[in-house]
Image 1 (cartoon, rainbow, N blue to C red):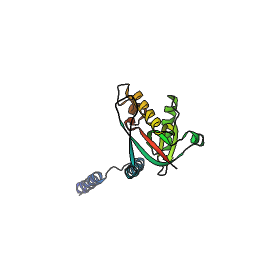
Image 2 (image 1 turned 90 degrees about the vertical axis):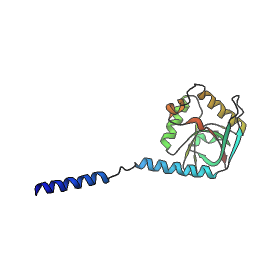
Image 3 (image 1 turned 60 degrees about the vertical axis):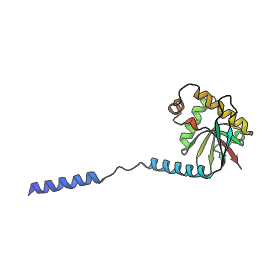
Image 4 (image 1 turned 90 degrees about the horizontal axis):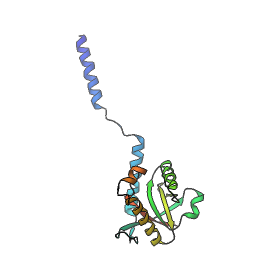
Length: 170
């Protein structure tokens, strides 16, 4: 009889052990939801393409239009109509950390937030679209000249192969 009870308990534990599936962390769920919202928002926005004026071979640069506001009042004067965005992050702390690292490299970084709550990390902002396109090309060529296409991902944790121009809507 005792063997039967032990076998029954063992069978019950095996059933319980195999039926539990690991749960995703709350952070990952929130992150994926934010990325999905951004992808939907980006897909619905009109995107214009401008030819890069840098000395490199012509590259198509995406220009996205959206309403953004500076995160800090001190950045308000520096945020112009056309900005070079190096990263879009959903967590403010991550955006601030990237801003600090880029500032140490000599960039004048501005943090802006769009209506969906995404933080745009901006390294340059201009009133003229061609200046922004040229700066984007310059930044891209500086980091890609290292001959290591994955350098920026390893250094900053952000894929910089998608530098883009933000046209600020008021």
